[in-house]
Image (cartoon, rainbow, N blue to C red; front, side):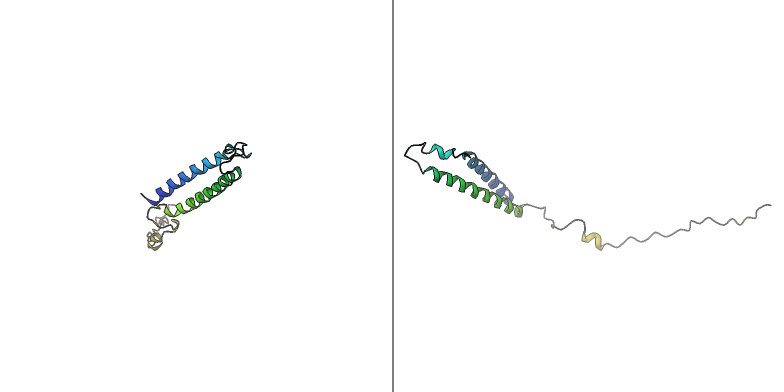
Length: 117
């Protein structure tokens, strides 16, 4: 399997995890953190710690996704050719110029016949 396919699979997995983590969060302080504890004295991990975990995991996943996207540029198969511009091709520049065509004299011939006056 090529390197680019590996990067592509990792990018899709990290993007899916990032979507899940963002969807679990609630902008008003609810979401997953409000389901732990529910207002009682017994809290599993605490509301603040759950919010911190989701916040940190969002930033880590987003950073990891950005790094994967930038690193996948290295793994792209460019067809084995050089990355140079095609506007200036060395092979065309070293070919000799075509020879000029022989010039033909297209001037009308002088009429040397006498005019009858």
